[in-house]
Length: 95
Image (cartoon, rainbow, N blue to C red; front, side, top):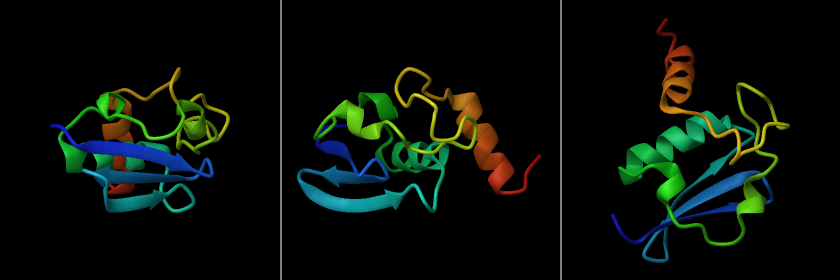
């Protein structure tokens, strides 16, 4: 799918846009990175890592993960689908 872009502001917010138009913004204070990735992939139907970035990749460093906290390297320790699905099941109370 073409037209989607993501950006990370303040090492805390991920914004999703389509054709330069705002869709939504996710706050890392309210959602772990795993959930943010899940919601963006669900909305776009794309792999998060395939979505073009507006800004710099380094802006994503410091986002807080459920597994690994804020010290986890966003791109070099990117969670796989199993980890993301496991977190979402835990959040929803499904074991």
